[in-house]
Length: 193
Image 1 (cartoon, one colour):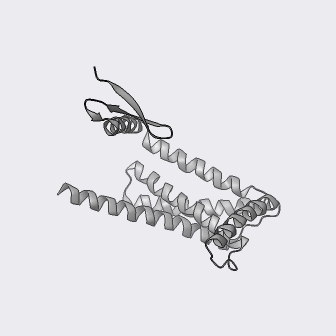
Image 2 (tube, rainbow, N blue to C red):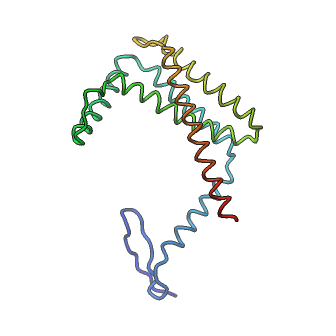
Image 3 (spheres, rainbow, N blue to C red):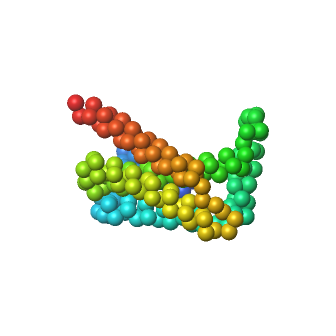
């Protein structure tokens, strides 16, 4: 009925311009998002998030199984990129070391684990005290196991300071996710009034 011509908005994204009705890209995009949301509601949320924590923990443990020489090479390449970026931004680089890069990697991966734990535990409809207990237990057991694994890897060592750093990362992730959830819930409450 209506003549349509394709207009390229950005690479890989096509929208339609209806010559008689005008731009139709936004409604089409909303319809696509709604259909994807229906798909997400059909999947088993607790199972999905539990698997996310399981596989991410596997990723962390896999990193711990990396021999010291390979781990040092990876940290060295990240250090090179960070130093190059800092030089371009004219930032003093004397304080940036491989040790700092390693500790930031530990902290970062465990912060993300904390966010995943926060989301996952809330999928089961547990009481708040059981949620907190589960987060605390997993937030200790995973870093403890991670450092224990390193005791058996060539050139690596498990360190109690890394356990504490990892626990701090998990705690940061849980608190950050909790604050974000609180802000969103507060905003949603205001919108309903």
